Length: 151
Image (tube, rainbow, N blue to C red; front, side, top):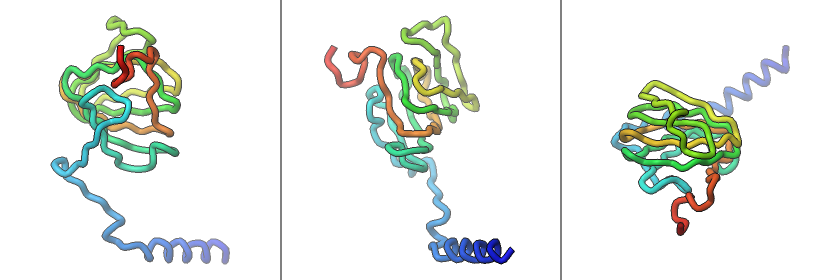
């Protein structure tokens, strides 16, 4: 019992040493700092909300311009994705097959297991919230589809 009391006191001391102003971060939509999403289609932007996608778990926003197509690809870690706004198309497969596609509107979500080939398209400008176990990556099924590569 004494151990639990000591642990609780130490935990409170650690929490109280932090500046309370830094304990809550509030960002308005107009203040989101978007950066180019590495390895993604041109125009796709991202904003890291939490974690370190190079090392482990993370939460990030992604913004896709209308009409953006993402060729079949995989990720090394599981991902959970929620559609915040817009209309997003997603389907499993190493090739684009629209008969397998699902159109997801805001409020929808999907999960992708690590190593699962899939492709996507933003019908309208779309903002997603992505959670991943990390590290975050994208590997195109056809390396020639990687943005920036000469075809």
